[in-house]
Length: 327
Ligand SMILES: NC(=O)c1ccc[n+]([C@@H]2O[C@H](COP(=O)([O-])OP(=O)(O)OC[C@H]3O[C@@H](n4cnc5c(N)ncnc54)[C@H](O)[C@@H]3O)[C@@H](O)[C@H]2O)c1
Image (cartoon, rainbow, N blue to C red; front, side):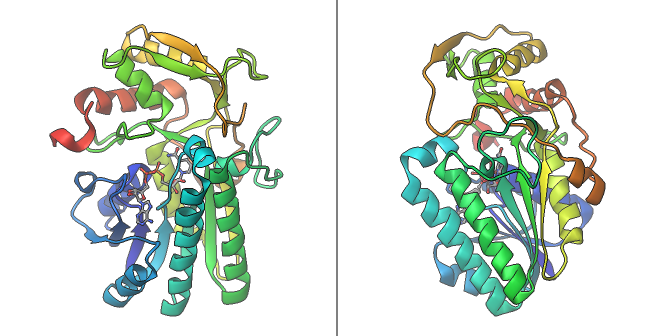
């Protein structure tokens, strides 16, 4: 019996698959490789397919002995979702429903879902699992909707569900084998590292007039390997008929300017920075209480501070500035 990891070739997915592989957990990866990379995967079973094609999922369940699922495949850029909501609803919601419906047909009921802090929107103080959900981007709405679908499946069909609402995943595997790649919509830390390597003219700060101490957005960063580890713990915690929800964060918010300062400290390079207007889809300030995950999943993040997270990202990035192309 194996665990299906949808989106396993992506940034978070590949770190999860690496951990499963290292722990001897059998897994099958389903990915369409739109943003994922084969080179990021160890020797596991790989199925190229797309969740939006329900037959791809059906066939996979017919051909492989799967007993649980970690569902990560999705589009994951809040700003892009504000400009292209249809693309996000189709992939993140319709794709997920195809997966869950085929799980039901195949009698597979255990699932860990990669949700997101984007379900909260702006939160005063630290976000708790029972904080109100007020997503400010279509991306955040898709995650909140999928959680609702899973709740219905838990109640009606006895699905054992854990949703992990994680904050900004960052860093790279301490193994040095995998890390984050600058894709079409690069995230802020890789953008800064790219600048530190002298590969871009400047780093743009979108919005300096937010209601935050220094006017820039505040985010909670969590190491990608810690996020991966939480999936493994969550699989064991899932119980039939229940939908459990856990935040994964480091309980501290860092502003964009603080991230820039941390990158400068880690890399020893001065970044060239320019200011730009706000973008739609960005909440001003969000960080998490992950006390529940720490208590119930016994989750102990290995990387608790931003500089140690960035140090792993820098280690990977300076050796692989073009991602997996050189491998
Ligand atoms: N990276 C973060 O900071 C973060 C934070 C919170 C939640 N998440 C969630 O974690 C998950 C993974 O995010 P990521 O950063 O690794 O993104 P990613 O783009 O690197 O990974 C997504 C993977 O899913 C695949 N995929 C997308 N749509 C698919 C489809 N229809 N069928 C098959 N494969 C498909 C992509 O090719 C890719 O390999 C997403 O669900 C995302 O919403 C990420």
